[in-house]
Image 1 (cartoon, rainbow, N blue to C red):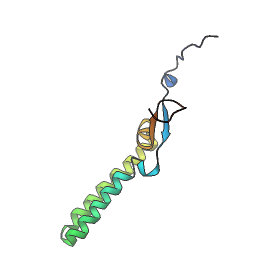
Image 2: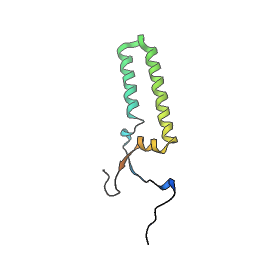
Image 3: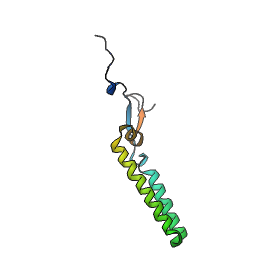
Image 4: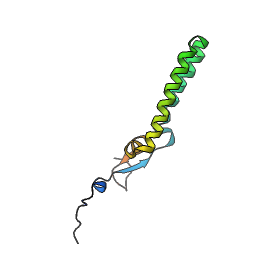
Amino acid sequence: MPVTPVADPLVADIRLFKKSHLLLHGYLIPFVIAYAIAAYSWLTFGDESLGYIVLYCAIVLCLQVLVVLFCFWSISFRCLMLYTKVCTTVTTEC
């Protein structure tokens, strides 16, 4: 029995993904680095630039919340942030 192509656009493209390690998730490491920069700045410059550091942390926090929300809103963005692409089910590398 020959296999006919699917005419439904929802199933027209299938890609395989493998879940990344927690430390490689796109919503975690960039923001840990950004908060570490803020902590280093606060320890280095002290109270003289506290207003700028608080503003920086607020902006980074808003960006982190948006990235996490986009992971819920968009499947493509979630796959970009949480998974790595694989070619076949036998091998886990492309």
